[in-house]
Image (tube, rainbow, N blue to C red; front, side):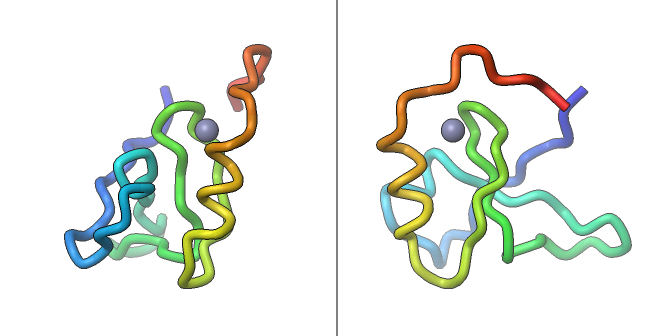
Length: 69
Ligand SMILES: [Zn+2]
């Protein structure tokens, strides 16, 4: 079963955050904000303070043969 994806904090207001969330770090209760997780395909997308990577992920066709880890 995939790890739970937490919704992005409300301070992140861009529309793209409807489709991305964050996972919690294993060792603490904090969200790992270096890595956004796509809610549609559960892919980790590197997040470095801007939504460029996230937008380009959404513009890609969905991987229909995506292998679940
Ligand atoms: Zn995706």
